[in-house]
Length: 196
Image (cartoon, rainbow, N blue to C red; front, side, top):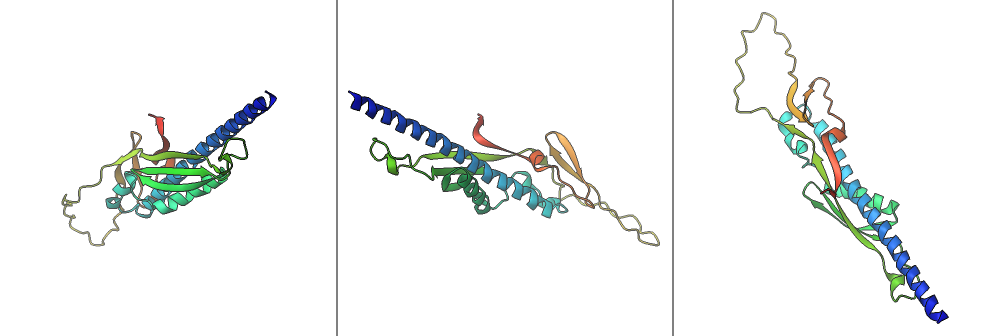
């Protein structure tokens, strides 16, 4: 009878240990997916800044569709490792990433068969949600003919870039000193399952 109770105690311990490992692995998967999405979001803003004076190229960044998925997945690997896990797969999904990780450690020694070689596994997905829209200038519109030039030509000042609206607020971009809103005002990152 005592042996039976001891066996049950070991079984409960193993089950509890496995549950803790599973929870930790799910946290690692969540962190890895969010890290990949955050990395992609930073890439979007940096790429946008590189073409800030050419609004014709903005749309790919406005909609969140211009980043290197391989670089973003490296961020997922780093965060998984910080949480004692390893990335098995990091796959791009529409405007985001699906990540599968397994625990770096095993469930451990216990009377339950095969637990000493088992790893916990978890998956998570995170997406990048654009918070802005951009009404690009119509390239088919013909520019107004320039007025008769004066005796000495005046240097034309570039027009401010209009048409960008973030979270309902119009943004005016000064082409001589272009500044974008903060990355958190351009895109939101969340786990799929949040707000769903």
